[in-house]
Image (cartoon, rainbow, N blue to C red; front, side, top):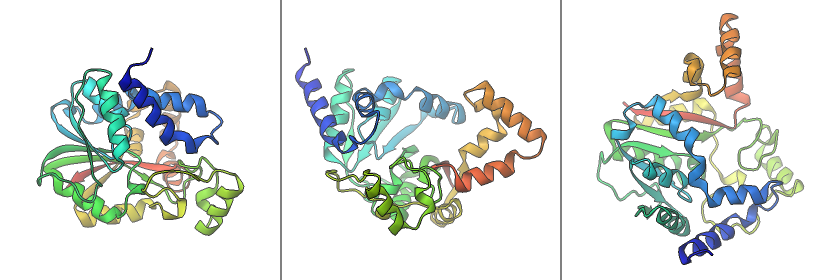
Amino acid sequence: MLNKNEKRLRELIVKWTQHFKHRKDFLKWREDRMWQENHQEIEINFLEKIIPDLKSKKILDLGSGMGGFLVAMRNRGYNIIGLEFNAEYCEITKLRGKRYSQDVMAINLPGEKMPFEKESFDFIYCNDVLEHCENPFEFLKESRRVLKSDGQMYITVMNRFGFKDPHYHLKFLNWMPRFMSEKYIAYRKKSKDGFLGKDRQKLSEMHYFTYGQFQEMAKKIGFEVWDLRKYKILHPKLFSGEKFQKINKLLSICGLNRLIYFLFRSFYFGNFRLILKVR
């Protein structure tokens, strides 16, 4: 029998996932959201490989959502807190933490207005957030302010010309002008009608970038941009499967791996996975 906290947690997650009922795997996907903290191992292990001293850092989960990553990191003993625009997501996060007797902190504020002193954090984790914020430039500027002089930020950035859109899961969507994209979303019956959130969810309102556009903005703010997928190509052991290691090695021998990656980055990948380093 579910306890009071677990009932409330499930009630909130059902409420905030109901607009995704068009997904073919909706029930499984929603159940994964219920236990989101149990699906973070690959992400955390990868971060630990590329940032070996991560355990010693003070970390901000910026746009911590329903708290899966935040709670998983706390369960591993990391010094991490969250900042989240959605108040009920913050409640979900705290309830999720109580499963493990963890008092998890998730502060309810937007990323453009962080309540932290200058140089408060060594590392910021920001996954699937930038596209939904009000002002990307101010969001990144605030991130730069609260990072220490040798700080780093992991961030995902939506690709304006990605082949399959990460939010609507439709192919060719981002190769269309935005007015056509919205009509196509409606035609495929994938509009997020009934979504309760106040952040940007409509495709034409979200912030997508080409790699060059984002890189230019980040440099103006004071960040050096480090492409994680490109880094993996140069360090094949970071690939999780032996098959990908062999393919990358073959392309490298032929001198094609960087060219093919550039084309994939520009016109295929749904997002860019980046590390921003303070300059």
